[in-house]
Length: 198
Length: 147
Image (tube, rainbow over all chains, first blue to last red; front, side, top):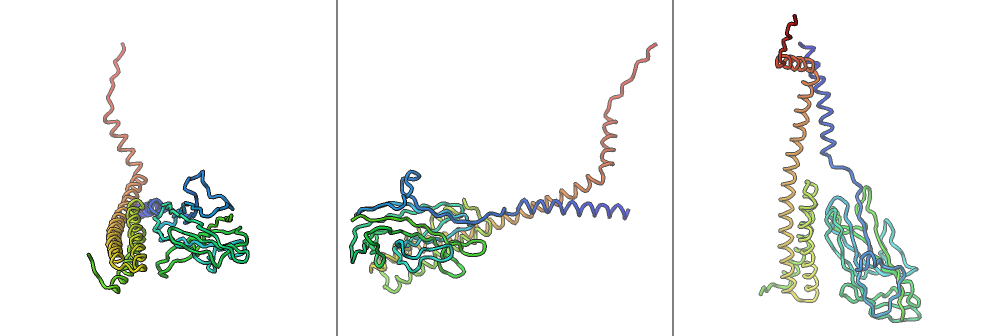
């Protein structure tokens, strides 16, 4: 009788281990790599990819869309910082933003997990002014007038608009450059080159 | 018309900012508790509206339009509060339902283990019983004697 009970217990424990392990595997959330996608498009959709090194004749208005895809597994409070640079200025990279460059504007948005958010970005090159061969721009970004100074470019060529993605970090209570990766923040940025004709 | 002192109005804008962040954290907490993206998406949309109100309040405050700023800040606070409350409710609901599902899943696993143990160890006896019942149900055919 004792032997029979022991057999029962051993078989039961073995099967219970197998079944509970299978249950744990089934009900556990599947691992997924978290990432945030960042893109800039014109409003004509796929036909209207923003061309590289376009020429703008002031006054000219451009309507673009910034798209932010959130696949981080949680809601994100994002901020896009818009900067102006030229071919000789500092570029952002995967760890640091282009803080030495002046900010032209900021756009805030809450983006749900799994959502791709479209943000309108309307900007106008209203006019240019030339000082000692260097061209400076008078811009209007999302309704607000800004000057490109101190960023200028010789003969108005090789300007670039830089878009940096920042996310809010609740533990520090401030926005951090990039989005939270597995081990550290992952810096994300875009740039569009353009020139101006007088 | 709402008339408030200038200091109070700028305070309202600060409160609106804090409430936005609080609502945002409530949504993140609800996600951790297991609330689905589909349920939380409307809250995120509402939170973006609250953010727009807060930005308008800030712009009006900078322009010196105190009453306009106050009005937008109050709208933002109300919306953020609604979002925070709804997110908390969704989070609690998701956590309860998740606990229930987990308990149910493990209970089923243990019950299955019990039945499987019986099936494995008593297989011989079960087949014997089945065989006996089949035999009892079988019709008896008598052969006619041929002379």
